[in-house]
Length: 156
Image (cartoon, rainbow, N blue to C red; front, top):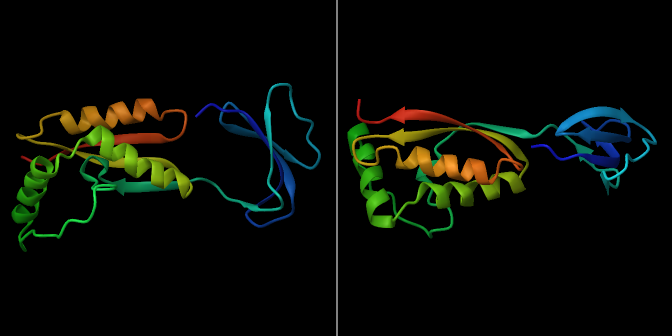
């Protein structure tokens, strides 16, 4: 995330109102009455509270059903039942990691998330397709959110 921005009249952590200057994705100054540098967008915060971006530290972006309609949970009680159900669902519901991770990330960004750490399946059935799909989404949205990928070995 590399955007530069001047936020006017915002309240960091519900404190006193100030302006916040962000350059190349980093806060460089917080004070009242900051002069807007040439070419930097200015947004009026109208006295609203500003907090740090939210971090989603554990998710599975490659397996999201977001935007696909509701599906009944049918996995059995054992861990292997859950793993086999996830694999079957990927096939039957056409889970595309690029598309589905993008749908879920769009919702997370709307709610203030700025960083995601996602476990992504690597197994004998999906191979690297989940990793490749989430990597494609990460590249497409790199100016909006930071996505860290952890390979999640499902087949031992």
